[in-house]
Amino acid sequence: MTVRLRAHHLLCMLTFVGEGYTPAFTANYRRIAERLSAGEEIQLVSGPDDICAPLLEEKEPHCFNDSVLERDAAALADVAALLGMDVRPGSILVPDAGLLTRLRQSFAGGEIRQACIRCEWSNLCDRIAANNFEGILVGAR
Image (cartoon, rainbow, N blue to C red; front, side, top):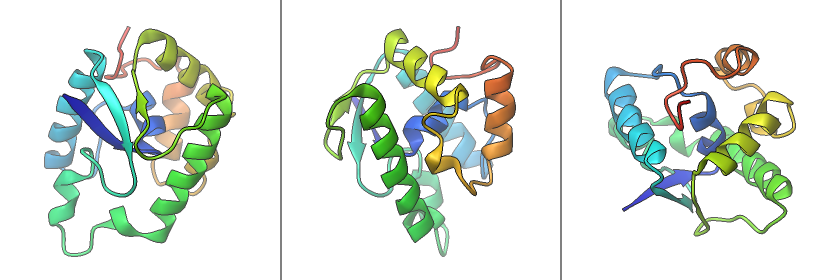
């Protein structure tokens, strides 16, 4: 199987420690974290993805907001530059130790954080990165 992720969730997965918008969102994300940790491939998508699924039932899900689409574009540009390859919706990535380490090092160094500007979770992610990604659930060490 393949995990469908929007681009900014490539960054969010780096610091996921089990916190989220709702209990259903968090439970879903935990299942996805297990799949990613097992090495299941990631297919990049445009718009809502597997992580967004529980939020789509809300009256006005934020997953469609312009600010979220802007986060996706910023994350896509940063990750493409880091990896030195064309990364776009439809691209497949394998979340192996090498990729996760490279992403986390760049995330901690602030090199791939444009998508995080004005994100409500940014302070939490800052703390997790500063604590050497202690407690992460994707690719946990």
